[in-house]
Image (cartoon, rainbow, N blue to C red):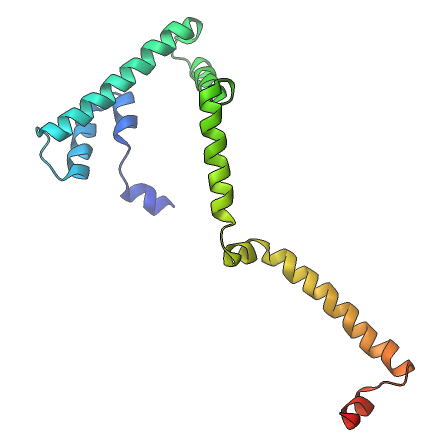
Length: 154
């Protein structure tokens, strides 16, 4: 995971939100395989920048009491942003659709279900085998069925 972190670059949105505009432009140019001054890269950069500015303005208008930049205020702003996923009706619908899609995607094939529940199945098989071996050792010989008799008759 550490190697992956070191090999991947930051998101252009994260870079713009942390005032690393030039680095964001470089990464967008690399992603689009185009020069930094191309129209596609510039439009995407401006779109990201405008979205960031909108989010900052909305945050200032909605939560003026949390604009000091302290860790506590930033934490509260982040909390309220995540809470809006459940309090806003349209966002709540999106969250539920995404969650149910991921749940059903995980259970779409018998192989994934088997892999997911293999520890449970293994423990159930172990209990069944122990019960079966106890039955074979103690109860069947008492009833007149032993292994040699069973093999000789079959």
